Image: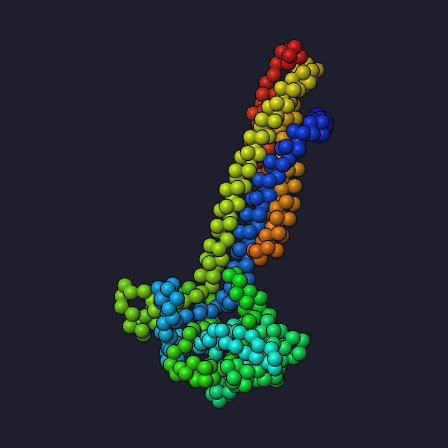
Length: 404
């Protein structure tokens, strides 16, 4: 134990003595570790963000959107989902405890006194906030009576409320929606933005009957259908069953693509992971290259150090130091430097990720995994690339070393 302490002390002295070597090794290792730290944090952040969005979307929910993938790709909108589809789905799936229609009108001008703003109007049925797990923080939700009576009432998103009313309480106030007077009956909880940057709080929710009749002149087709099931563990099974049911109901020929799209929690996770994949690959390549370069820099600097310290090694061997002692000392120096480089790299990675989050609102989540990966990689570099210089130093013959 005393021998190991002496070796450790000598390693620390050597690290301090050869400052230029230490600085170059620290820089090369820390840059590589910083890149890989950001990768681990970005990957974890992507998964955490995905599951947070799934939680708000509803792990027990499916969203059906009218129109085929091909039509949406070229900017066309197909009317394929109907109000009758909703009744058929409710009858076919007793495990669904909520099935609500939705229709969307974009770029609608709304105004309050002298304030005007363009927003998205969504028509829906009663219990919209329950269907989306989206609390009404002020006022109340849309009711069945509002839908049946084609009433001019609405729920307002927090961002739209701020644009029109500022600090004034909007509940009970009237706004003009395409010159239709609409009373605000509730304010939705602030949700923020989607992964693609869309503002979720920039919206007005009205009874679907009002929107279809007074704004769209529509009596049959809806934009989307939201379904929530009692057993969320069977959501993947429900997704396949809903697809099969609607294909049969819409008489889609075998081999032809669906005339609708199903968004599920599984698809949200897949989308977010793919969204971060390109950055992770880029940083991964940069990080690995940086680490390999760092390893070669460390190995070459230590080989030069062995040559410079040949006489010192010879004297130590001649007074009783074993080959193992020399090997452990040089490996200890390498691991000390790379460990310190790993710690600096972790700090650099943390600061870089904060900048990335600030500039691009990228999901970053630091946990013990990012720190552990950085530390283990730094040790690996120290041992792998420090072994050859350490072995060369340990194999020097005492007499020849002193003579040199």
